[in-house]
Image (tube, one colour):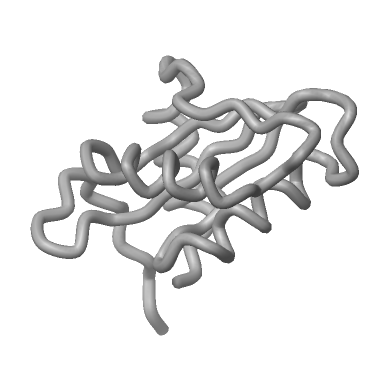
Length: 103
């Protein structure tokens, strides 16, 4: 799933006031953290993740690793040590994304 820049901007705006729902330590994307992210996506479509110092992966790489392990998840943005991940609800999406212009 690819997002346009307009859709990413819309999701960043919605994620701005959110608090992190998951904290990644030096171990990175372990099985328990992936399980916690899947559980978080049961009740929301946007998740903010905080990546702490000391890990082998940087914030972007850690966010990409998490998104790769949870189906239909994309990295919206990475700013500092915080990453925003998006996964639309498969049955009833709550977030309406702006439509992309098709030529």
